[in-house]
Image: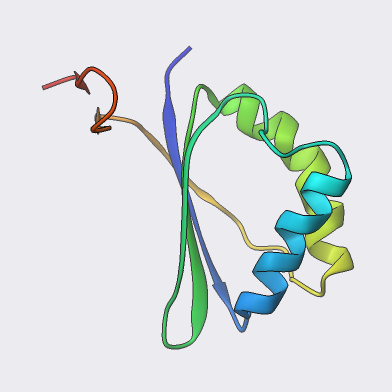
Length: 100
């Protein structure tokens, strides 16, 4: 299976909503979603941006079954993710992984 990068741009989402989603994931028993390698999130002027790296699209899709109801519970509208095949990933604490 091929690693993927996934990003969401979620207009109108606040830091408080984002933080509550993480709390709800932890409470539901998912502090470390299976297959999630990297996660980053940041506010933009009008939205909340999330970028993930997953072991595979299958792992991401399985996690979506858990995540989507939690997003809805927190008033976050369905946002279609952009999924891309991962070309390069650098992590300072691990060996360099690249298709270059």
